[in-house]
Length: 116
Image (tube, rainbow, N blue to C red; front, side, top):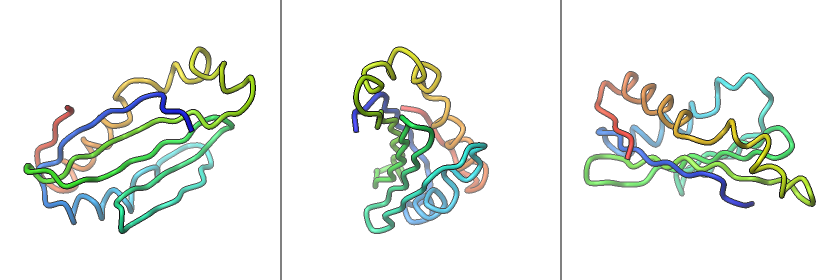
C-alpha cells in the first residue's frame, strides 16, 4: 500500500467512547460495496473498495481526548498503481472524509472536534 493522503483531527471526548463509535460507524454509510476490517485492540478500522482504494481510520490517545487519523492508500498494482495519483485518486484527496467523520462524532458524542 502506498500512502496518498493523511489528515488528523481531535475529538474532545474520552478515548474509549470515541474509539468505540469510530469502530462501529466509520465507512458504514458508503454507497459502494466495501470490505471492512477492524482491529479493536489497536483502535483502527480499514475499508477497501474499487480496484485501487483503501481508507483507514485510527484512534489514538491525546491530552484533549482522542486523535483521529484518516489515511487514504493506493492499493493498485502494475501500471494502474502509477496512474492512480493523477487520475481516480484526485477526487479522494483532501480532508472531506475526516471533516464529515469529525462532525458526526461531535454530534453523536456532544463534544467539540477540530481538524489539525
